[in-house]
Image 1 (cartoon, rainbow, N blue to C red):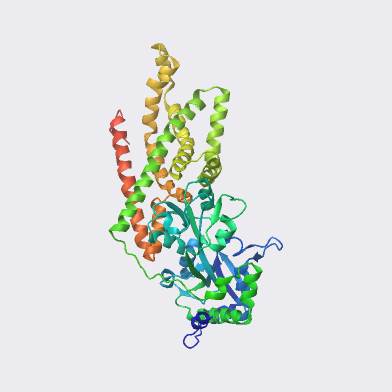
Image 2 (cartoon, helix red, strand yellow):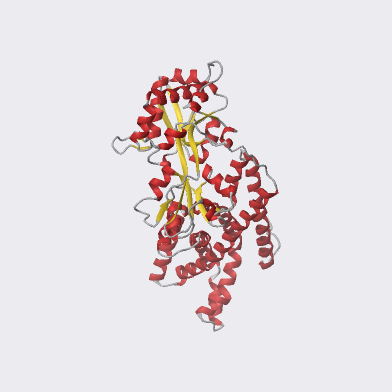
Length: 481
């Protein structure tokens, strides 16, 4: 309560953004519906409306300010950047009060105290976070829990969704999950995961706050005044009790915020982190393409020279993998196939990209096979070569030479598409960039570093392919115009 009161103290009121908000009659706030219950989510009983304790708190703030509130859907990891870009007036969506956050935005008085809860398998001997030193532990990226994992000697694994880390914990891919108690109680320690238990001891505590642009202190004062008043008259407690969130933490510590003053720079340690991520990117890309090439060759041969059934099967495969998003394929491979056979994130990444790009390579090789003059086949028959010998010694070598330029382009595309595997706890270049951007308080340096590493990977590979293409070409002279 003391911290709530202190947070609303400030200088004289100013006529700025707050006046514009009241004149417009609308206060917009950024949030991500993917967070789901109990934060904010589509109201199942009222179409077009939102439910959740944060929705109710925002509506109460709007009433006290004399305006209506509107939610602006934004990816959670981009909330701060979108706020500073002017996409909405404030952030109100499980924003954790940390030193890193205070460097970028103004933070309001707290409205909820959360605890970082560690979940482990029931057969685990771990009873505290330090029992998992050196072992893989999952969390959401760009959260205080993620900062905790990076500050101790565990093997942190980043996730984008609430349920995915607990599925991996249950399947044995990781040994623990550290997340806010709200998430842990609703996604981890539930009947759907009977082999998981949440440890009772809080690893840490923190508070949820609203985020306001640093240029809008008048808005901060108004939000603080509303939250303090809600705490005094009991409305905040009533909302939290309705969502079954009022507990001893709210009584004991409401207003306590987490301090994290550490600010990183792009030093040698971070450079080596990018190097490690680049190695992972290259490994996934090379192995995925090595899988895609034979799959593509087989499909192309079946589609051009196979019987009716072979052509139907090969075309069905190609249309399936070309006609559905690779993100969907990755989810299915990881979370559906993973229930049948335990595969590492790297293995699933290679399989998914290989199977997906095999469909694209099939069309490249099919076009190359059809580009070979019919006389080549007829000459092979005249020399007494069988069908397999003709294919192996005459057609495929020429087809691969013709297909080499588009193959190079496809490999570079696969190299970039490998960034999508970050959703299944693989830290490759793009994921490393987003992590570094939070530590560096901006995307400029991290983005440039990521781009340079991608260029260092793709340009030499493209040059190698061009040299190989020139070496395989029969006539290296340019065509006359």
